[in-house]
Structure formats: C-alpha cells, structure tokens
Length: 105
Image 1: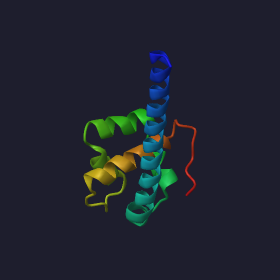
Image 2: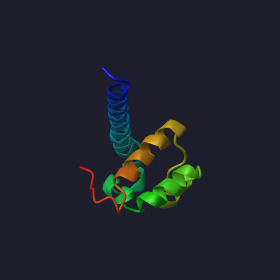
Image 3: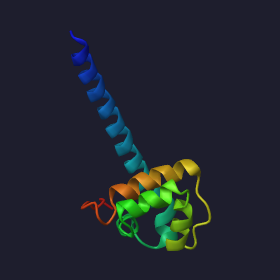
Image 4: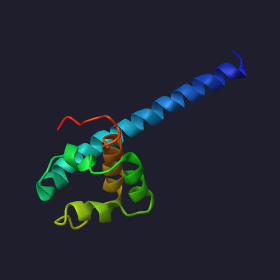
C-alpha cells in the first residue's frame, strides 16, 4: 500500500477517535448537569444549554470563566471540579441556542 493510503486511513481513524471523545464528553456533561446542577439551578439542561450561543459558551470556557457564568445563571452553585467543567462545556456547546439541537432531558 502506498503512503497516501496509510495517511488517509490514519486521518480517518483520528477523526473517528476525536468525534467519539467529544460525544462521550457531551454525554458525561449532560449526566453531570442532571446529577449536580438540575436541582440547584431549578431548570433542566435544555434550558441551561440554550442560555448562550456556541461562541459565547466557547468564550467563557476559553477564558476560564465557565464556572463564573454557571454561578451567574445558578447562584446556588458553589464550585465544580475542573474536569467536570470540561464535560459541562462540551454539553453546553453541543446544545447551545444556535446549534439547532435539543437534548433529551
């Protein structure tokens, strides 16, 4: 087999792995919201994720201000683990108000 075929197979596998990882983060973020935030916030994850656009959720996450924004929307939330914030970000981003998607909860 030629090098180009190996490169194409590698890129396809890498893309598949990254997509699976992001999907897993989204699911974990939804479960975290249901377990850790739904009762505290007083509304379901669909309402929470659609509070902002994808660009806005990305801006909060990239600036390290995701927890601060969650606390603005849900004042009773005190703190969350850094690793949990990453999963929540994937979920909020995936189902933001400009994504055209609605979560099943």
